[in-house]
Amino acid sequence: MDAAFTAEQDEMRRTLREILAKRCGPDEVKAAVRTAAGHDRELWQQLSRQLGLPGVAVAEEYGGVGCAPGDLALACEETGRALLPSPLLATAVLAAPLITAFGTAGQRAALLPPLAAGGLTAALAVPGPALAAALALTGDNAPGDWAGGGRAGGVQARRADDGWRLYGEVSQVLDGHSAGLLLVAAHTGGFARSRTLLFLVREGAPGLVRDRQATLDETRPQGRIQLRDVEAELLGAEGGDDPLPALAATGRGAAAVLAAEAVGAADRALARTVEYVRQREQFGRAVGSFQAVKHRLADLYVQVQAARSAAYYAAWDPDQGALALAQALEALRTTAGEAIQLHGGIGFTWEHDAHLYFKRAAADELLFGPVHRLRAHAAHRAGLFDPSATPERAAV
Image: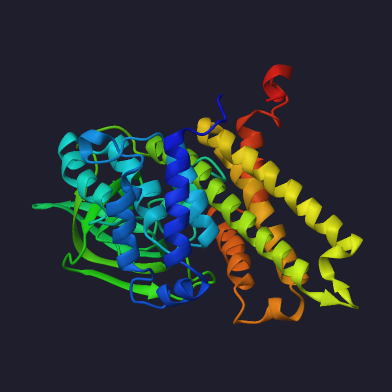
């Protein structure tokens, strides 16, 4: 593993940081999340045209940049620093890899170019708060129980004369209220022969009803989707492979990207706190000059740097993504909490942006964690709790 960044990666980081510094300050973030889409459409188009951000990890033959997934993680570290509200996570991290891995040749050719160009956004819709389970981050997704198990609830699919029809409701879908394309996990075959498949639903399809939901973290906009006899297209070939392994592989890559994003947010929260305690005076001296404050900040710095190392390693080896995500989310949660404390009275106010980092930490744990379940599943996969495991395997 070579941890050194290339000149291209350094340039991408520098350019992205400059753009976000100009267009994505705290006031701009608060204004963007209150729009109907939940993000700044003009900024999204600028990032798409100038940097090709949504197509960083998409192959060049489909109009993407053709970089490695690690480059997308590096970019998301910068978007995490700014708490950028955008469709990047839902489109480039969750939807595009699924279409690449599981779509037919025709579906890849039709969908990946507009996704890579930023003209089309996409969202992965799984029932209820089951995103972490669907991506196999907190448990095995193979049983498919996270999608309703073929019973009442979730989304049901049935064949019709003109293809497939979907029925059901999905809540807490990242960018589900505004995405132009939905990837919907649905059950087919009834209870006896239930099977989870992925379907494509276009914006404006008859019977599709969407609305935005109130969320803890406004920078992660979510929507509720109602499917009322909606025409859908099966993702992949008829009678093809099970999509659950592709979902698990997407989850491993997404965990690495999310870990980098959380590290970026934690690093920025820490930097802002250090800057504040250097300037804020109490008892005739800077707050940061007190030994107890220095120790707290030093502990935070070590935790953030450890999380960064884990995130970079996961970008190189996505199989370690869940563990890196657990460490990064814990670092973000701790740093954001300490940032509020060390900012004193102003840190608790709505006008200050310290609460945005704290909400990002809490919301990401709700969506992709919690931390203890991420670690428990990683330990289970490594065989740490298996009495029949060999010492070598248990030591992984």
